[in-house]
Length: 257
Length: 278
Image 1 (cartoon, each protein chain N blue to C red):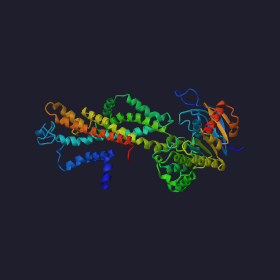
Image 2 (cartoon, one colour; image 1 turned 30 degrees about the vertical axis):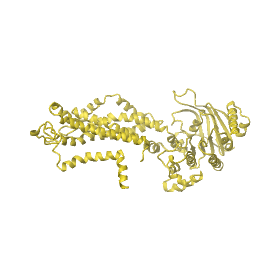
Image 3 (tube, each protein chain N blue to C red; image 1 turned 135 degrees about the vertical axis):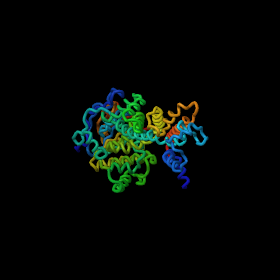
Image 4 (cartoon, each protein chain N blue to C red; image 1 turned 45 degrees about the vertical axis):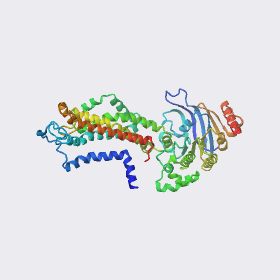
């Protein structure tokens, strides 16, 4: 079996009093291995984005209290180590792509700053990355409000891929883009995962994304991980009632469409 | 095209501010050089309390000094401490707000916030009196008084703004992309904070000019014979039943100044609300 990139063990996350007494995540454990695309599905409020924050080491930034361990290649990670991993070994494509771009900073700059290269050296690299995600390099000189949601999302994917990360985290990567772009983006993710010995976690509502791209599906329900199974197996024999309902609902939607 | 550029430049409130500041600073010097104004400090006892338009445009005060000259020369002593204090308060407020409002700020980073809360609960006029007692009469005591009066307000408001900004998806995304705290402060937070800083500072112009003038009126400003608007009102007050002009004209100057500050703030707010075209 291939090497584990990141492992989450017994993660329990609560927000300080006043929000909810119930933990956002409770006893969540899973591992992501090299060459693996994994989908994380669950209804809104199930804690999917909190998992992403945990894998980025950003729970403290959100004033959340976390117990449990996140191990990167077998080692526990602390504050400084997270700072080195983020943007380098971990590429992240946030939800709401357009809001995720600083409105005062040009599109290309977002990619360049992730590369951490001086402007003159970086220009070619930035153009290459933009082309890779199917964007005209000229887009680099526009401001975020001048590009569409889909373009912003591809831009963020370019930034996430910039440093050849070991782990790609994508939060609802296909919500804002059309079907062709969607397919192209997911193909890029798959290609990066298989060629770069990387791992990807795709947070999604969309069954077709999960099934077409991911070998394994994690189902999160009310802060607990209720399924962790290979895609085929989950579709055939979902064990948890929520997972069964999710599979049935999304299949019904697909038939209806 | 040149005219269009000039027009758009002049439409910007900041351009007007520059023009007025230049006039205020250069005006007295130019008028002195042209020998239009009388000496603002030397008494002329044979011309005491002359009404306006009887030999001098705005009349003379109880020592026979030209009121117009004193109003003009009083501009800088009155406004300098107010503006300097305001600037210092703005700089302190931005630094303090960024420190205390930054997500997951440490305990010591919250220190500016606590000091500001303490100062907000303390009567500002009393602070000013203590300051004058400690630092002595003069401009620096006034500057400090303005800082202590305005800074807690700015700290309070800007800190909330920093917190709101930090919750913006692009700040979070910047964190996730691995940018360090310094990079986030300078590139994600500060540029988005500056419009609020400009407007808040202008809104506090009224407060600080009023504070400086009140202290001067109470005799805590620069010592005589240096003219200040507040000091002129105080000096003219005993003669008010017979002569209104030594009191009214400094007040008119003060009002004009406050109106201008308010108009500037309104202009900036409108531009910001309209999305701006800069």
